[in-house]
Image (cartoon, rainbow, N blue to C red; front, side):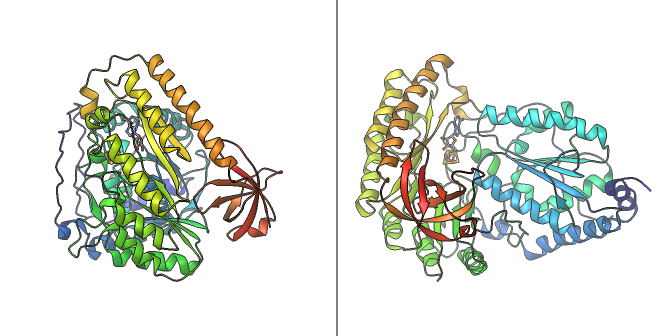
Length: 514
Ligand code: 5AD
Ligand code: SF4
């Protein structure tokens, strides 16, 4: 008998597994890159086509059971490694993939040389993220050489792009399975396909996207959990690849979200982050209308000691209804991530953001009027094609005016297929870097000042884990989401405690648990 469970698996599966399965795998790797059209209008989807019927999920569960039966007969328990890049949505997706792998009987490892199945969940938002993944996937060839039965899977936003799939097909022949975010729910079937057909599987069909309820999940923390409230994006900001790879906006039914959150609160989770590319357009596609502010109010009624956070809000859709709900719901953190992207109205128009500098500043004023303690963060892109130094400095002046608690700053990265990638981009990387450095210098000073203002205060914080640092052994978060390095006993993990803030720097606070 073969050494590894997977070798055993492939022989057995070949004869017995799911011969009559309905294969919907689209092997589209023409190798020719075709530009994705620029779709600006919203495309309402028919709910009956979006929410997957229970039978479709049960069918995947059947694949999972069959996989589990085969793994069960293997000489040892198979190990899976899930390597995640990118945003919180990817983290949440990976937890679902881990749930499916666990139900197939897999244990988990971080060591590619120990693994029988490796899943790399990728991010396409900037070129650097893609380069990193290609580097990591390239290295996995050594693990495959050592264990030819290793199955390597690539999923996530990179995998949804035909050009990437083509490159993987031709130059990374050790990768067995490629599937985009829209096919995630079919992972058990796709994995079975790799074993039964003993060939590489590419599933990057350009579907509009669906909602799969009831997928298994492995949550990696007992304290913090992610709950997707919607998927996809209809905004088509001109620099962004997300709408092309994650499909059209689709909202989960509120009942299902409430049910999931009730369960998490009962299990003792203390911090639940609602996820969506643009949570403020939540509910527009539901048959029974409900907006995000309404959803927050419904969630807030669930009794318990927990905090709700959410990301990301689009400034064009964040309104007074949202700010009022945030202010009035005790379970909702007074924290808002409101990506501005640029402080220049001309650049914002070119980015297709749907608001001006002045309109953005007015939203911030409205939010702070009802939540003076609001912790406000943002994303900014420097060096959008055609941006001038003067326009970049308008962004710096907006940052001075708003005084964010923290910023996520990026230098523009052209994404093939997006409209911005076709624009002339005459400014050198060095010049963009100098604008970027200026922005960082200003924000670091502001973050430092805002953090210093907490020193001497006593705050209620959630201890969410150990920090690995002997001097500050615990890590915690304030209600506004600021990181606190804490002195205190390890038994406090998972609890809300009062902490006296004794120090601060640009990135974090320091304190003692009381
Ligand atoms: N180049 C640089 N940054 C980008 N972002 C999205 N697309 C790009 C791009 N092409 C940034 C935006 C977004 C964040 C998640 O990533 O600021 O809000
Ligand atoms: Fe990308 Fe966010 Fe714009 Fe959607 S709203 S296109 S995810 S930047």
